[in-house]
Length: 309
Image (cartoon, rainbow, N blue to C red):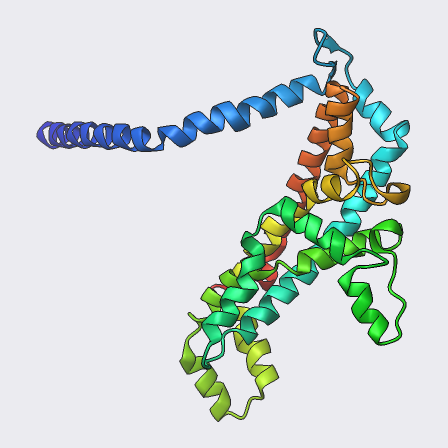
């Protein structure tokens, strides 16, 4: 028994030595990410968490004030609720519309026909164009007097809206602009569609299933993992909308009636216009909690509709 025990201990020591060597090599290769995460992500997050309980304006020392920033946020800052409403409106409409648009576009571009690669390239190009240049372009397209969109509508005797000058149409205008760049997500869906087994479609066709039924019962379930991934990342990205509103509303003034004052834009104004950094950090913590809760809910609901082959 003693010999057996000693033999096992020797094997464990040899395995542990090799494991340590592999671990050191692994840490060496991942160290750039770890260092970057600690310096540029975890560090600022901890600083923001601490700063959210202080009065801080970049020029003075942090003064601990407890929950005063959060109390002020929920009870005194009307623009907080306005910016949260604008952001929620954008997320609720933009995320499902872009997901549906990406899926339908991917299905259309998954056909075997001559020159299909050209169409795939054309639809993907908007996703790689520079952000500010695209926003300036769309400001011209959405011009109520000389914009191309209203000009085309006038050909059909339709009075185009004022778009970015009308509080009712400002957010739909941004959602329309985002639908133009669904090519990025389309590429993910297209790659997934090409990996769906052809035998499933052949069997369904033999059984007499229509094109809609083949799409609903085969295509859609097979791409639900990518839909789930797209919904998660798109939701997080939509809550972080900032650049579009900043460029298209005269340096972040929020547009007519603050209709484009999104959460991140309001937080930016508090931090770098009013220099109320403590309050802005408190806002960032609320945004973090909202995104964290929504991501957790999506993860919990995923097993009900996401199918893995």
